[in-house]
Length: 191
Image 1 (spheres, one colour):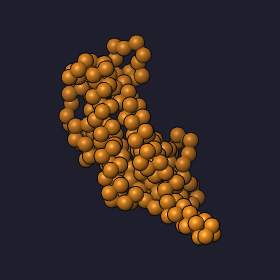
Image 2 (cartoon, one colour; image 1 turned 30 degrees about the horizontal axis):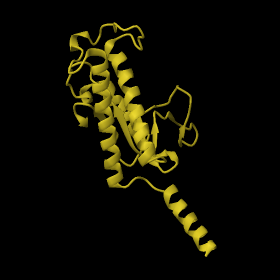
Image 3 (cartoon, rainbow, N blue to C red; image 1 turned 180 degrees about the vertical axis):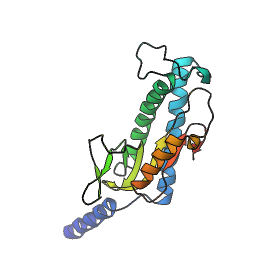
Image 4 (cartoon, rainbow, N blue to C red; image 1 turned 90 degrees about the vertical axis):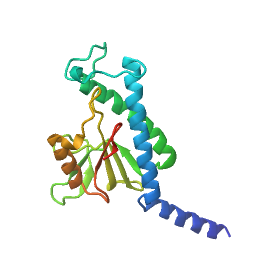
């Protein structure tokens, strides 16, 4: 009987090590990302500007008027803060639901001779998407890529209209994956 139990555990272990998330799990993961992005957006805005207030779009390119500046403009400063808060939320929630199927800001590059996708710490020639769903315990077998965008202030534009974003998403598409890379914003959610 003990051998049967061990064999069942090995089979279960193999099954949990060798799969992508199914469609229902992928939808659940996307819902978590959207929820965390919205929470991060509203929390940072409220902490800095007060309940229900936001930075006017006309101030986005100005230097932040805070003691601990993370970037030269309000847009970049807020983006860094919101990404940090969103990443903490996503990591906490995914660790509970999908501990072996996600990575936050993994850095990828193609191996020069084989063109295989690999994780790297080199900046040159590498790409770093925000959130990646991947094959169980294998971050180089990409399922889906999610890029978080936080429009500054009361801007409501679609990030896909930005040529730099289009190039960025093409680079992520070249990494491979089972689904098209998507952008998630607090206002437009998944697009």
